[in-house]
Image 1: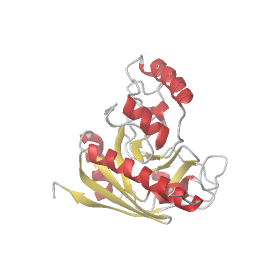
Image 2: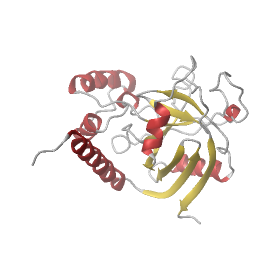
Image 3: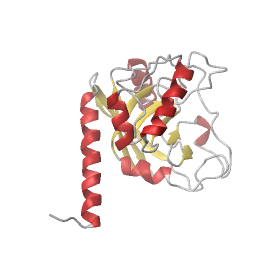
Image 4: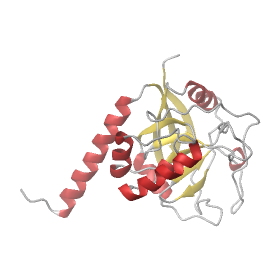
Length: 236
């Protein structure tokens, strides 16, 4: 049977979705959060393997901290970031990125189970020089987009990881296959805490990451979280 170009594209999309669904099932999640944004809805499952990050994120959502905040930092083929407290009433062209609470969350690295493939959600943080323990921001998070990686690129990434983590983070065959087929940002593994995953609305993330931005990586057209709600909570 011969496939036309459109049929092949649809088949590829279905295969990618199927692979991602298998990965989602492999993780443990008892909680979910819905982000209703001006670009569309994004539903995020939070992992039980990172309880401090899960509980902190749920607390902030229940307190309506994310309501009206912007996706203030967007880098095409890399990630989209939200959670700057200063972004709620930000003026056009205002540089953002410093709005945070005065506490941090202890790192919860769970590599190789949780890693930076496309669609994963992780917490931002201060750099290693001022934050050697790699503790997470209280409220700023990002959603991974990244790129599909070649074997050659992954080999270079492994060298970079060896230097950054003293050889403690190794790309497994499963991780390598995901980065070669789904994509992501493997150079961040073991250095930023992954605590959730987009289970619906990855197309919305795609639209956001393609938006035009200014010199500070802020979208020229504001993308705002209208409302964040907990839609699944085992503790309720």
